[in-house]
Amino acid sequence: MDQRSNYLPDKARTELTMRDMQRLSQTHPTLADIVCTAFRTSPIAFTITETLRTEARQLQLVREKKSLTMHSYHLKQDDGYSHAVDIAVLRLRGSTPTPEVTWFFEDYEEINRHVQAAASDRNARITWGGAWPTLRDGPHFQIEL
Image (cartoon, rainbow, N blue to C red; front, side, top):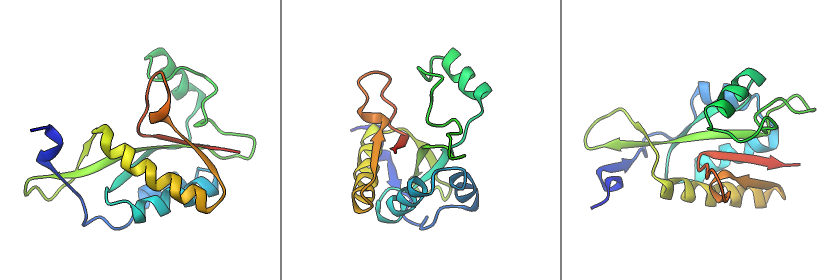
């Protein structure tokens, strides 16, 4: 039995939190709209962990080998927004009422299907970090403008 079977989707969470919405306010509006739609349509709840980054934060991630570039879409772009969003899946374990962050790649694949459907409806192109050949990054989504 895989560990994922010990967790249930957090179906009680039907809206993004105020913190999530504040983070999305720093993100390109089309990407923010796509992420909100994916949250509503996905059977898997998630939270927004990171959008806009400072150069210092990006440098730290490069030094820690958690990012490969200083040209991240998380940095403020010419339009004043981040063009990337990182998420974390929320699941319930047993009867525990508080959801936990989980990193089961299959969950991020499912969320990606909802992100891509929402992007298609808007004629937008989203790159999913989980499809990258190196440093696969399931929680990462970025808009290509």
